[in-house]
Image 1: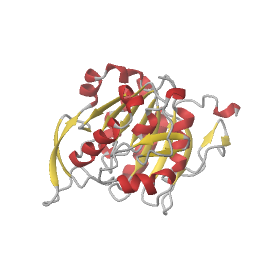
Image 2: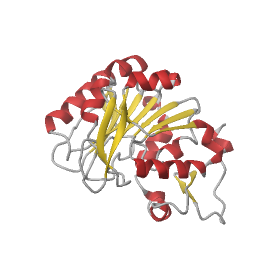
Image 3: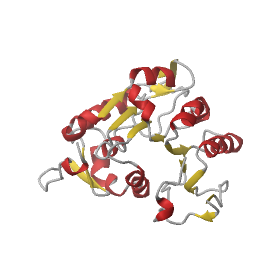
Image 4: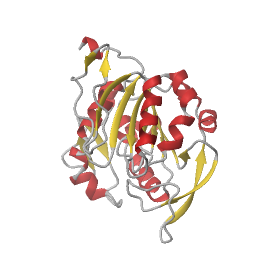
Length: 269
């Protein structure tokens, strides 16, 4: 279905908000309904400008850390296919509820209640249902055991991901092991990677290593912003600074990095 077929928000629809020109519906009875109504319309707008620029009607998108659908429901209005991974039971329940409200793009969404990791198995994680649930963390009041798939298992289940052109990774610190485990896949498919680094969970050395790995595979870094002391600066495309992309972070908590394997038509703009 083309983007032009996306149903618009109508004034009478209380469970619909417009985000960077794209209508997104949500379950009005869900826990985060108030957040959708009041925060989502202006939440991380620059991130969605990035999505709009790089995601096309033929794009296959992998959303690692889908939370309640805040990115995937929007992306499914633009892309051919969006595969969403969310290991938190509480968040996944809301994700399913919200996806059900978006009938015009439901066929383009595949939702999996799993974590993506370097190895198959199980992992303990918090289950608050908020955007900061973490694997490998024990909370006696709110803890679950979640299934972990490795990339091989994911590709067997969804062969279309061999054509992945855009990946969003927001794994609350699990990027430490995940990104290196994806190296051969990234080398082969050469997608654009939108990575959220989490300084509260990673050392400076780990963050530097992840960025170096991605920059080797995707040497064109279109944007980076981090509001605290450690920062990457002066990345260039063909010898000149990139100044055409919007600010790429709205939070002092995360470092949001955009990597692309080729400059595409950005340099011609």
